[in-house]
Image 1 (cartoon, rainbow, N blue to C red):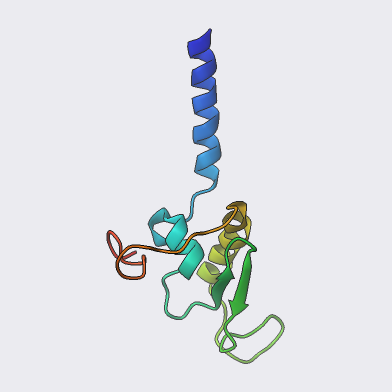
Image 2 (image 1 turned 60 degrees about the horizontal axis):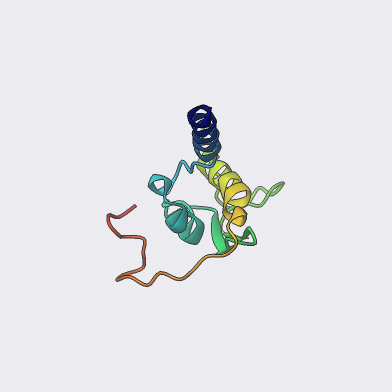
Length: 108
């Protein structure tokens, strides 16, 4: 009976974790929540991951405006993941290793 309960709990945890996967930055939550998507031409920049706040790039067109660079589907998708997943953390510590954390152990 204990094994059955443990198996069910493990299955539930695995399913719950699979829902909170990022499609950007090699599924690294620290790097994604700190830097956002890797694209240089991204239209949003993270400000406070724990609060889910971000800065919209003024060179991108805001909604209902004909000026600026249009938002890509990756911009919309990554922002949706950012505001739905990153605020679930209670807070985010600072990177203490060498570099910025974006390159460790590989650039992603």
